[in-house]
Length: 257
Ligand code: PEP
Image (cartoon, rainbow, N blue to C red; front, side, top):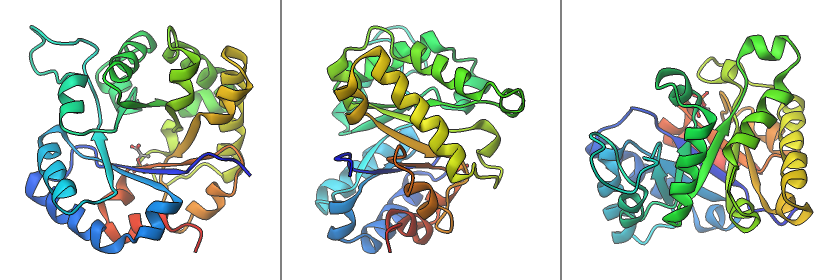
């Protein structure tokens, strides 16, 4: 059995203001028990404007719930209007930040070099990047999904050391499965996650490949998580829509039941 502790991360996207965030975290705090946190790392990724409220609640109630952001600037500070730095996120107690989500790649034209710069900025502030990769439908239909995802991994990991890579998280999210209700089959998820792990082994070494956590994301819900988690190279899930429903997210965290 792998020593990797699974991670369930809820990507709220642009949903919930800071008051709604407090209500949702309170519901999660009520639903999640110590045994859940012992078995699985659990995180929420709210919009920037909610982070201070989430931090206050997590600190006050001493919750084991981790939290993070959905994006970060590649720059340390300065004249970058609208941007938020990794140091600012670290100061708010963020443990994670997603970089290279397909919605950022598509709507904000983020390329692999920028994703890499953002991942390195996060690592520099001791925040774990959740590096998102995944193919569009036409790439899968052309049978090029593995090559595509492996190339995105290569791009994202430039100038990242083995020690840093071992601690980071990669999320395989086929674009055609995000928000569509179409989940990749557990075998499809395993195939790509295994290929990513093998690539990390080639880029670094076997120990790094064995330690890095690789998540699946794309229409994950309570009803399909168990099959996905049964796959040997899938170490958790990045959950969008279903993470807005506390009951559903708790079910996902309890996939073993
Ligand atoms: C996501 O956006 O990271 C995601 C996986 O979304 P959904 O679960 O809604 O498909």
